[in-house]
Length: 308
Image (tube, rainbow, N blue to C red; front, side, top):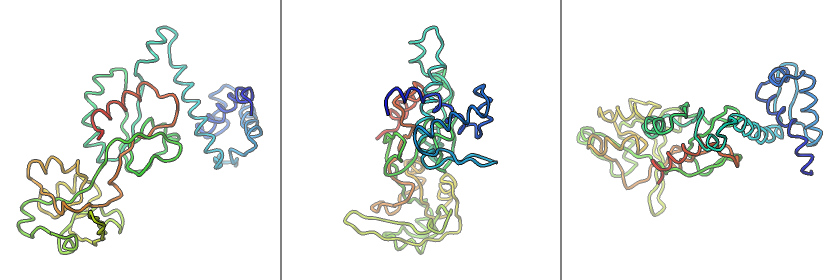
C-alpha cells in the first residue's frame, strides 16, 4: 500500500476508532457532525481498502472482529495522538508541548496501590501541579485501549502483545508469623510441616490452599494448607498474623515494616514461596512512539522511587 493511500485513509481510520469508542454509527456520527450513513460508508471504505471485515453489524450492537480489534488498537493510538496535538494552544506551543499536564489514569493491583503507589502521590502532585491522577485500584486485567488507561502495573513474565513494557521491580511473597504464634506452635523447618499449622491464605479458589515452594538445588513441592481465617486482602492477612492467628502468605513489601519492628518473623526463609503474584512488576502503556509528557514524568517518578 502506497503512502498516499495511507494518508487518504486517515479520516476513515479516525471514524472507525470513533465508532468503536461510541459504540454505534449514529453516536459517532453525532460527535463528528455527519450522518450515520456517511459514517458507515467511511468504515466500509476502510474495510474495502484493507480487504478485511472490521465490524460485525447487528441490529442491536457492533462487535469487533479479530482483525478489527487489531486495527482499532492502532487507530485508537492515532486518534489519541491527534487529540494530544489539538489540546495544545496556539500560543507558547513549544513550552506547552513539553509541560506535563492533563489527567493521568493509572491502574494497579490493590496491594501495590496501597503500599507502593499511594505514598508517592503527595510529592508527585506537588511537583506537577498541572497533572491530575486517577488511580484505578483493581486486581483484574484492564484493557488499556478500551478503558483509556495511560499506564498499568502488572506482574508477569513479559509485557503482553500490543503494549510497551518497562520492568519496575521484582516482587516476592513470603511467609510470616508473630513471635507469640511461633512460641506457642513452633516454627516449621520444612514446608511439609505447614499442614499441621493454621495458615492465612488468599482463598479466592481451591488453588490458593496449595502453597508452592522451591529451593535452590532443584527441590520443589506443593503443600495443602488449612486455617481458620481466610482473606483475599493482604492487609487483612497481615493483621491476622500480627494477632497471632497463624502463618500468613504476604507480599514482602506488605510485611516489611512488621518484619523490621520484630512484630512478625519470617518463616521458612530459605525456601522460595512461589505464587502467581510474585515476579516482575511491569509498567505497561500503549505502544505509541509518542509518549505524553504527563506519562513520561510519571514513569520517571516510579522508576526513581521503586526500580530495582
